[in-house]
Image (cartoon, rainbow, N blue to C red; front, side, top):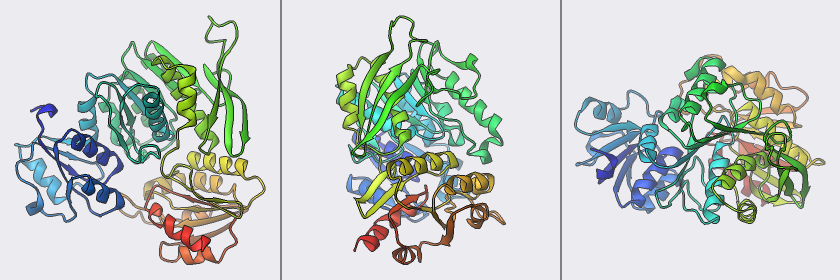
Length: 460
């Protein structure tokens, strides 16, 4: 059976951000969608409201009959009863999430966005710019877009924009025509072992790009250029050695104003540098950099400068990516998904740049025991940039506890800041007792579930 013949499909772990996008794709096609997830969430409730049938008990009797295909996420435990049931039978095709995404995009023009951070924002921004510019891409996004209120943007099925996840080597299932690589930072070392293994995995992904295709890669990344396609271009926020960079960056009324530049040292046909003036309405200097590959790809896809400018200016961002929860002079609350030290540093520097005269308080929930163990000092170095740090307990996600690894591992390396360790039960009341000017809530775990409670406690 091929995926065009699917009439009834089942998702194990349907509530994941990547899995739910796939489920929405098949639901959009009119296919019956069923699923299991461990916990009912706002996202799974939305899927149910869209017509999908989901259960929350690990129970073979709840699996629907007559399935044509099963998709599962690597986050599902290997000893999960339903997963083991499907793996033992030979009748129904079973695929990992990444394999199914690869099958959907197979033989179709595809733009894939990869990197340790920034990929969700770039994927969403590119999909929006192309769509607002008159193209009609189908997009799979690792976050909920503010413009479309979803992580799946339906299109005509003839052009795909997809987020390419490095976890579990998922992005090796993609063979794009165009791709972006934003960063290769130490992460997922429980899979890759070391930085060298991670770099080689990214090189394999780059090698999957059509040889006549296009690569946009952050300037200065350590990769073997022999795997690059014929057209490879670099970008950087400031470095003019890159093919694309930014100039004249300034902030006016919390809006970034700047010019992107195609440096004439690379584009020899230009007598002078080609520039494009832009306005960006979402926070974070790193998001200015994120616009650069979007602009380069949009130009290559035939959009005009005016269409690109309008698309960037109307992009509203991603839920939990520098998202303003409250924005008044006496109190500012920002929610962000950052879960790597480099992401955290860029986030903090952006907040400091926007609010140089205000006290900044960070609430950070570490994500994964292994990541905390490997990067505790680096997390502390980034967090030490602010005046006050409130650490929450580690969100384990798919992992079991590691002896000796807790949030205190980060706390012991913090310097020159007040620091505390809280949990989900006491954090709301404890934050009410503090004098807060700018509060930044950070993490990739379940911290997002208490954001509104914190907001209500602080503003009323």
